[in-house]
Structure formats: structure tokens, C-alpha cells
Image (cartoon, rainbow, N blue to C red; front, side, top):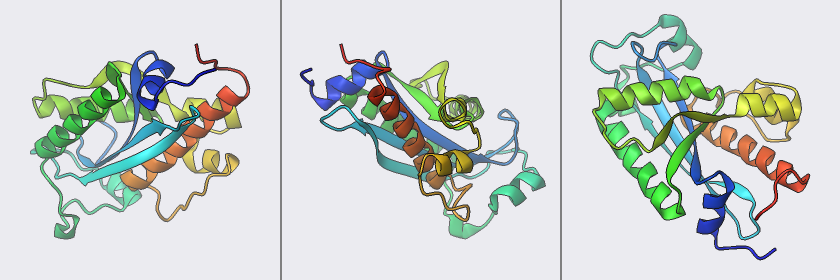
Length: 210
């Protein structure tokens, strides 16, 4: 086959959607009431042979929105102290405005029509992202409102395991449990896992460029 340029290739691969890997660390499980404390996005690109690979990662520490719930068990699990000034956290409205603008720019640059969220248990992340977008009154949401690409499901199919750390082990991707539950680290590892599954599926003949 003759490869198109990278921009054309990635816009063809996922029916015009640009996959963007998102991870959120939160103050609980309820996206309507619980705080977003960290959010990270890993962008993806294609090399000149059509292989998907992680590109830049951006991450933010986020101030709990006014009236946000913070579950002690969730904070113990993530190890995040929301009130630690060393976090240099920014207001949620600032973070979401900047991040959504960055994603819209990536969508346009890639020749895609919109973004689709990739995550490990992706509907959890999408719920928090959509709730934060609504609280921030962002009108131009780049993400598909309900479609996602879930690496928990994909790794269950590909490797027989749905936990991120174990799936990475089975995929021969380095994973440091001491770094886990940082949004930036988990987004990058999720991106590496997603790319490996997509590329392997192509190598096995499950995808053909038109």
C-alpha cells in the first residue's frame, strides 16, 4: 500500500475520531458531587508506517470545585492532599478551558472531526470530564458524548486481564506501582497499552488500510 501523510492516516483509522487518552484522579466515584483532583491527557500520533504511538502528555493539578465532596477513602487510595499548596493546583474552570482548547487544536491538526476518550474503565473518566465541562460552562466540547475506547475491555480481550498494572505486565510494558494513581503516569501507561493492542491487531491482519 501507499501510505498517506500522518494527518490523513490517523483521521482514517478511527472513522474520523482522534483518540485522546485521559486519566482523572478524583475525590470519590460520583462525577456529579466528587472533586476532580488531577487530570492528564496523552496525545497519540502515527509514524510513517502507520503504527500508533504516544506523543505528548499534559497534566494538571485541580482545585476541588466549590462544595465538592472529598471521600477520605479515595484520598487515602490516591495519596493526594487536595489542600497541599505545593500541588500548585489551578481552578477547575481554568484547567478544563485550557485542556479542551488543546484537544480541539489536536483534532483540527490531525484532520479529525472530534475526539474520542480512551481510558482504563473509560466511562468513569468520561463521566468526570463531562461533569467538569458542564460546571465550567464550556460550549465547544471536543469529545464524543458517549462513545469511548476502553483499555480495560481491550486488555481483557487481548491479555485476559482488566487491571491496568497486570495488563501492562502481560504486555511487557514497564509499570511502577509506586508511580500509579498519578494521572500523568496512568494516562501514559494506558496510552502505551492502547497503542500496543491497536498495532498488534493490525499486524495480525485485523485491520487493513483502504
